[in-house]
Length: 155
Ligand SMILES: [Zn+2]
Image (cartoon, rainbow, N blue to C red; front, side, top):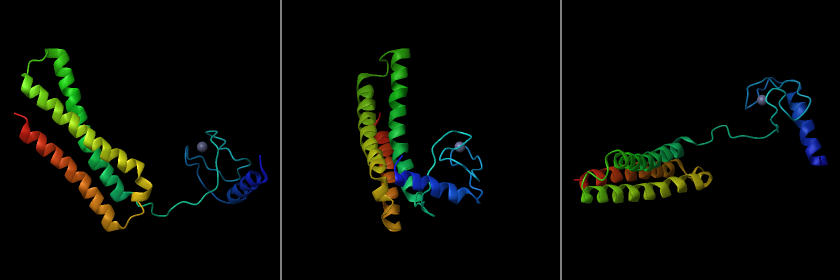
């Protein structure tokens, strides 16, 4: 253990010496802790700084919106796969082809949007409130467009 690590452990113990703070994992009261490990769940602890308001709301709204689209298409593909296994290719070639093309396409587009929301989440959460609302709106509009195109093209 380096001197810096040892200093961090001492600061953690000092901080917890007279405070009732619960373990973020198991909620055990850490007052009077003598090491940098929770005595209840055995996980390592460290003293840190966290945001009072982490700006998750609009970003999560966008993640849920994109997740709905990706999830809808994925579940429809799962549905048609089960139909295929249980009943064979009985719904007509054109219908099946379109059903699969529309849902693979939708799942791919919405999957990329969802992956981008997760990959760039830290950067997106730093944007202004207006931009975060706009991005959440775009995610939901893409999902609605996806479902609308699917509904209108499947016959
Ligand atoms: Zn714990």
